[in-house]
Image 1 (cartoon, rainbow, N blue to C red):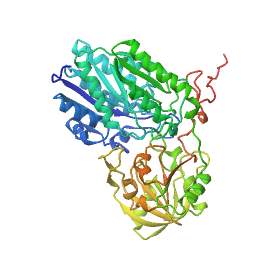
Image 2 (tube, rainbow, N blue to C red):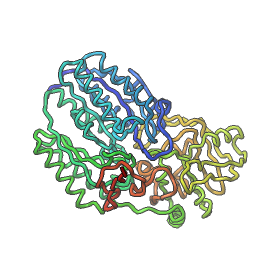
Image 3 (spheres, one colour):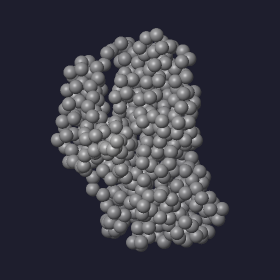
Image 4 (cartoon, rainbow, N blue to C red):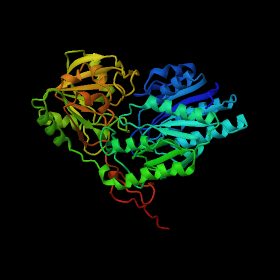
Length: 509
């Protein structure tokens, strides 16, 4: 394999779109990052080399191989409803225009794979196709394009067709993001050396709840072990994306794909995984607890335990389209007189500002959160004591996003009864223990932790957890995709494992 130095166009554009969520992603959301690195351009993008994201792994691998990277932009925003036309066109436009500037030997894009814009169902497919058209026209020949994808990508035929190779994460929590970027670099190296990769793919006929995708648990753990084991002989790369089951368009859902030296080898790997998934479909179903059940069970388990019990407030996960401000879990904690509990991160800029004006030690009557508009979600009206204040700046030290600097705006710790509430001015998924510490809360010392997260928190919290529970409190991110009001899903798709089949409504003439 040749290791001749090449010039590689490099950019990142990440968004996971929940088309049922209440708020959209504007350009300003990408500027702030919202749990992702801040938007960066040019040489500043190379500063991501030590962050656990795909771009970091790709940069290190490409630089080690002696290639010249031409970084354009890296932009990501917290999952939400559709990306606005303005945000999509401005960020995509920068990438496409950069492709016009000179002849590149290759292109790498750090993408999510589940972006839906206001005007485009398949954001990544649109971007990849635009880049493909421009880059080949300028170069006068086929230039290899490789992209890394999130495990939750809704992989489309357009994406597969427009890229020479796509490679997805294999862990959820996503602790292998940088590793995936390095695997993308290895695939691009093969393509730049002149190898031909043949592709095969299959779409699965059922949606999977995101809580069921956790690779620390079965059946997901065993599935991904099998994915890695199939990369041998003529099979070069295998990926499985369970999808993001909250995007209402026909190609939402799980996809398996592979690249090999022959189409037959790639197809055999895909078929083996497809058959495994069909055989194990029932195992991908997920049980959920009500808020009251979760709090009562957590209090029971915490009795005499030396480590905290962690509850996932999964339906208000800002990593899946929630706004991190639903309050039913706080109502349940107070209703059941939970002791030694902490709840976070709650995004309520007005409450954080009021706490900062009042100062530590002050008591405030506040109407906290409860503005999602979701039935069953109401504000928590109460008298809070201000326990701690900070500027909201912290570094992620856990396995997820390790090394990233976060700027949450003014942060406050508010106490009601024996519950500490970490309140921020911008939303971020509770996936790192430092997001409690930035509010003055030491998570290891608590008896119960309620995290606005679905699965990512497990990477940093399971090592300190006595037990983990999953609560289904009212929120904008419906945990069971069978509960969503689908309108445009592919006909015949089962809306949950072994669940009901989607049938489009017929329109009378």
